Length: 323
Image (cartoon, rainbow, N blue to C red; front, top):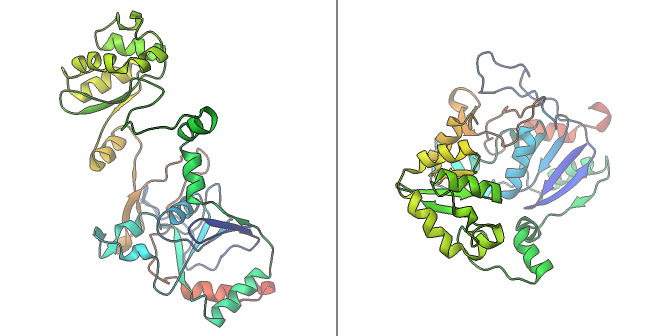
């Protein structure tokens, strides 16, 4: 089976054989972990072929995640290529990092869908099976992703308003200032709030009727916030972070991107992988999902425009019985 992605977010299932005439030996290079340069797909989606007609961000990001999990992804581009190829700066070796960040593990073919030869080949592939069109609009996704916010209106008739980084239903659940910066503290229940109060040296706070339950703390956040901030400002954010997490209170420092990558590395997430080798080697962000038995792979660096065009056109033109 294969999954074809068209437009920004349209998807369709089409039965088709796997593209298997790649110019790679399919064997892992020795001593390259975590760098992976092989083309033999492994992972939970190995054996799935994806025709990716999407561009810019949402579609290419989704298909990159599929490719990381073993799917064979063919990036179908117009003659001018994906728009993000020209979205720069920043660049790496003259190539847009925006494009690089969402297009690894793919092959590229440039097709002019107004050209009769290209259309004939695509039509032949279409004749081999039937599928369905799955449409995912950005608006529908946004409304679904807002979950409790849209639910507040749909189920409760409450129109959410701007609160910055605060939470409408919980407190504390927002960035709070420390001696050297802000720390996001999320005491999501009464037990966590009592632990927070203990660490801050305010053990009697949970017994105050204004702050005993979450409903009380949320209603009286303007009275509670300055009491918490007064204590938090006495020490640096990382000192509070280590002590609070040790006590079981969810929290985290607000980092710049470089600090965030360093922090992810510090806590063992190994956030950066190198895809490709030699001049093609590119450091990119690791796939976000960890599989114990079928981990994500990093076989191919982001392709240049039409890099695999000849190979894919030959494959499209082959009669079904010869594959």
